Length: 327
Picture 1 (cartoon, one colour):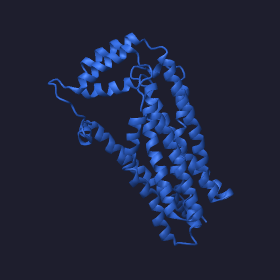
Picture 2: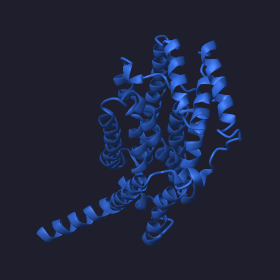
Picture 3: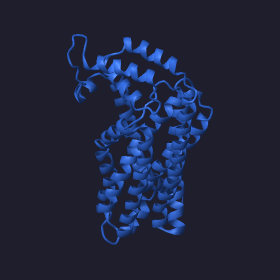
C-alpha cells in the first residue's frame, strides 16, 4: 500500500539537490534507447538487405515507431494506476527495468533479424520510456515546489534531449568500429547506469522522509488536519484519511482525527453515502487550459518526432548530393 506524508515539506531537505542530481539521469538512458533505430537506420538496412528489399525494410522500419506510439496510448494508464497504489518510488525503478528488458529484447531481435521480436522490445521499452518522464516529474516536484521547480523540470528535459544527442553521436561510431550488435547493446549499458542512479535516488528519498519525520510536531499536525478537514470535500478527506492511516507514525492523536474524518466521509451532509466519481466524471473535472496545453504539446511533439525519424536519411542525401554537385 502506498504511504503518504502530506504534512512533510521536502523543500527543507538539505540534500534535495543531490536527489535531483541522481534523478535526472533516469531519462538519459531511456531516450538513448528511444532514438537508436533512427541513428542506425542505414546500418540496419544493410543488416536486413539479405532477407528483404529496401522498400520492405522501410515499411517494417516505420513500424518500430508506429507500434511504439500506438501501444503507449494505453499503457501509461496502467503505469498511472500502479503509481496511485504503490507510489513514485516503485514505478520509477519498474519503468527503468522495463526499458532495459525491452532494449534487451530489441537487441535479440536485431541478432535474429526478426522485426516481430524487435517490435515486442520496442513496445516494452516504450512503456517504460513514456511512463518514466511523468513519474520522474511527480517524484522530484515536492522537493522544489516552493522554488526552482521550473529549473528542476527543465533539467530533466535537458537530460532527456541529451540522451537523444548521445545516441545520434555514439551509435554510428560504435556500429562502424565494433559492429551493429555492440551499438544497439549500448542502450543496455546506459540503462544500467540509469538504474543505479534510480536506486540511489530512492534511497535518498527514504532518508529524506525519515529525516523530516524526526522533526515533525505532531500536535501541530493534528491542529492542521482538524482545520483543513472543515473546508475539505468528502472525497478529498477520504484520500487524506487513507494517506495518514498508512503512515508508520500512527500516533494516537492522528488516529482520533482520522476516525472522525472517516465517519464524515462515509456520510454526506444529508447522511447519505458518497461514492467516488468514475473515470469519465474525473476527466470532465480537468479545466479547459489543461486540454489546450495537452493538444499544443501533442502537436509540437509529434511534429518534432516526425522530423527526427527521417532527419538522418534526408541530411545524408542532401549532403551527398551537395558533394557530388561540387565535384
